[in-house]
Image 1 (cartoon, rainbow, N blue to C red):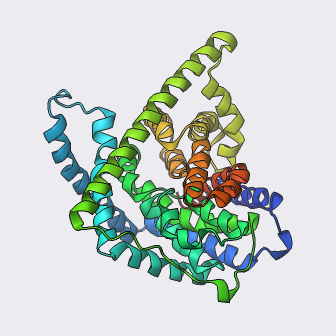
Image 2: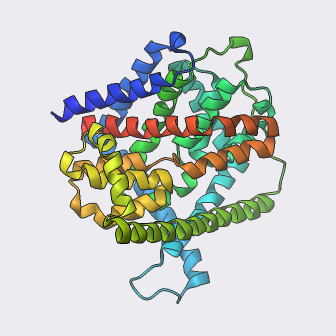
Image 3: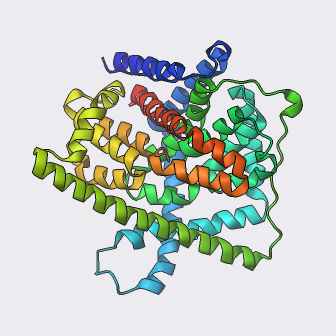
Length: 393
């Protein structure tokens, strides 16, 4: 029965993308089918095989070690603030972002990351039926982040037609930055974080290929990566340290605002209607949870967490999930966890549009105009990834 619901859910997601397609006659079916098969195969490999278990354990162990290193620096500066056995969210989850950001900077400085991103991007372009620029951008988004990635392609940004610009922005919203993966792993199981990272790459191309089909002229399929301004090693370290700290502060500020706002709205709704705002959202999103093959008995609670992610951000939703995780079956917990690992929320529209506008005002206005369609597509990517995982759990 679960498989049947998952198949129906997959068809519904593809149909919802088809419904808003800008050019239904030119949708490329073969690459879409191939990428769905790859998604299922990768999800099965990572979640259901010994090899996948070893890979994920290695990845998680690596990030755990990095977080330990980060905690050495945090303890030196903030030691004594927390009681023994306790660690405030900001110290244990957000501040390690600073250290991860530094590592990304080091790999960027020595040209290791650009080489990896370019290589994987070229391989992806052989599969997805899109251009090298789109494939590189998807990989880069998953490593350097949804706003920073546009800096690396800014030489081409002004010449891109809106179809290709949509795909670039959709990839940025459908993935997550490597700098905050460690933070996610402290809140949900690492195996679901890793799985979502991998299959979201393909999910972004699948949904974009349906919503926004186009063919790239081989003569125009040129990848021009913006070289970073030459800096000394220590100049680079200082810049990435400050960038990581800014990210931690911004995420912390957003959490303070969103968590407080949701608590206030829930209280008001409870007093007036006898039901909280999140419970209402849960009922609205319950059908979405159901087509993700989540049992009807858990669909309302799952829907509330999914909706929270959409209207606030993934951190708030992950915090809510951790509070009620024992109420869900392991399978449901895995499906929801994969859904949460992306930047698909309303605030990302402003972040991406602002990032593009800072580099090219005209293109930034174009992004702002298709902002809701962008969020619609990225949300479908999250649902698609959750459905793919439901096949193998």
